[in-house]
Image (cartoon, rainbow, N blue to C red):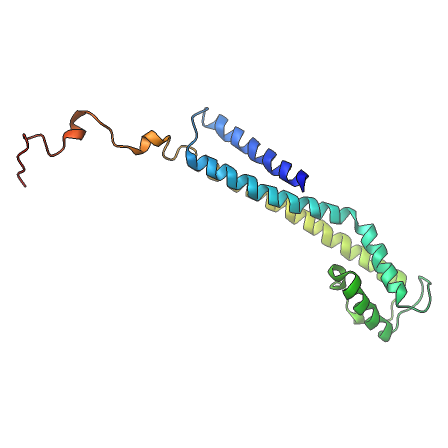
Length: 188
C-alpha cells in the first residue's frame, strides 16, 4: 500500500514539475493545487490496484497449487491421470467456490467431467495466467490514461484566475468614477 501511495505521489510530482516548466515557472492558481491533490489521491489508489494485480500475477503458482489441492481433496485417488466423473466435477466446483471463489468462475462442472486432473490443472493455469496478465495490462493502462488526463487538467487550470488579485476590479483612472463623471448629476 505504501508503494502505491509513493508511486501516486511521484507521478503527480513529475506531472506538476513538467507543467511548471511548460508554463515557464509562473505561479500556479489555487485550482492547480486542487487538481494536484485530486491527482495524488486518484493516482495513489490506481497504483495500489496496479501493485495488487502484479502481486496476483506473481502468485499464480500458489493459486494453482491451492486449486489442485482442493481438487485432490474431493477425489478418491491422488494420481494426476485420474479422470473426473460428473458427480466428482460437481463436488469439485462446490469446493472451489468455497476455497478459491475468484478461480471457481473459470470452471463449470461440465468442463471438468471426463478430463484428467493434469488436464484441468493445465487449463486452470493457462486461464489464471491470461486473466492476471489482462488485469495487469488494464491496471497499467488505466494508470497511464489517468495520469495523462490529470496532466491535461492541471495544464488547463494552471493560470485560471492567476493569483487572487486577478479577480478584483482595477482601481484608479476612469473605471473607478463611473457615474460620477458629470459632477454627480444623474441623467438617465
